Length: 576
Image 1 (cartoon, rainbow, N blue to C red):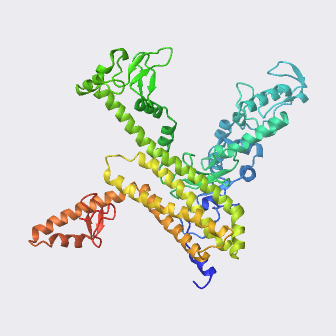
Image 2 (tube, rainbow, N blue to C red):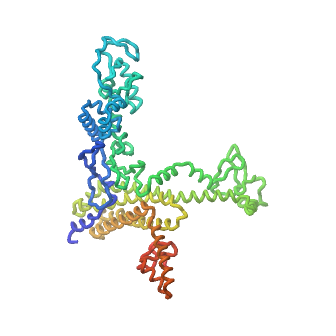
Image 3 (tube, rainbow, N blue to C red):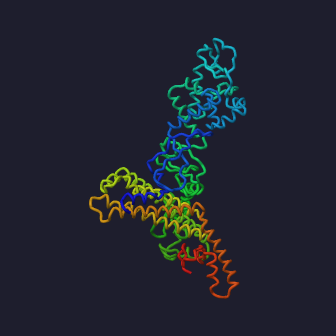
């Protein structure tokens, strides 16, 4: 490269497949007309130059933006249908805030919609008498102290206030409030509600109204992060369901769990339930303890001899191996550290079933622990890397810029590397849940999975070490031994290589490790072609001819289909 600028352009031209989820950039707030839902169709702004997978599949909305769109939807329906804003709001809530459905149903059969929703037409009836009896408290009041909807059922203001207050206290059902008269279906509009209740109830009612705009809408959901008030609108069809809120929380749109691409929602649900289930506790008890022969309480033996004494009030003394009373044991049965009775009974098959169950539970527990520990460790590493990224952006970037006499924009490769680490830790974490549920009888798929997972993990460890340790040399007081441009080249190169590793890993898992099935199919085709070639030729070169025709050869150990140009298997490295 001729200059630092050229070098920076060379590295930032590569797409960052993952990094945008952890950037500080925010989505566009520009509006676009939507005939179905009054939501914004604009996408997230690009966070860095990229050639990554489709990303324009969601928009983050604040409460102010939601309220604004809500008002625009009400205004639009009121203008098109020539009705009041209160009636328009009732219609939209009934039809889940879908403007096109409101318009279609209204123009198809206005009277049926009015009857269903409770929007009765105001009739030009006779004037009410000067004094009316309230239908709830049965007291007589002047007409100025009575209130009614368009149905004409009058109730005193005090009873109306209690009725509405109770409905608001009960929850969001107050948005579909009807006339207190049991025989009447007239809807109670927002204006009447607001004129009757206190300020506290007004705040609650408006909150329910705001939340209904998201919770009743199939295209929008609230961010599940604790304390977050943002909502997200999702545009299906992009393939990935992983989205990220402005608060920085990435999650899956379908199941609302933490973002878990490339693992499907079903696997994630099973894994989370397993982590919380009591079954693992029972497996541990079965694998590491034995029941007291008298009181049946489980006892764990961590060390010492075979003489066990149960805790009070039981205090039963027994042999750990055969579970027989210790009074029948002694030197004649093998002493304190052995049991001849147990060995003899085991040879006769008395303890085979119990030992088999205990050994099976132990193996299952060890296997689960293996995957869970690595799942949890990568989550801890991801959290630590995210903290390091935030610290780098807040403190170290300015310091590094001053030390290297370069603008922060030319040091973006450092934050790109950390964002890659954070995302790759998340992906790697969920691959262990995937591996746990991978059928044990599919050896070829398991080998291939462990190979691509191992390659990706090794690349990630190299990148993490370079970003965490090698960078400290340029932040310390002592002058570095390595030129900064050399470090830039190394870190940017490792970022690109690691990204490629994880793209391959994600692609393999999202396709169900189909490369293994394709390899088997190619291997079978190769065998058939080889058999035909041997039948038509008598020399030893017939097999090689078949390989040249198909272009692949099948590994005799793992059946992986390899190109004819290589001599050892690319999956298991076996050399035929």
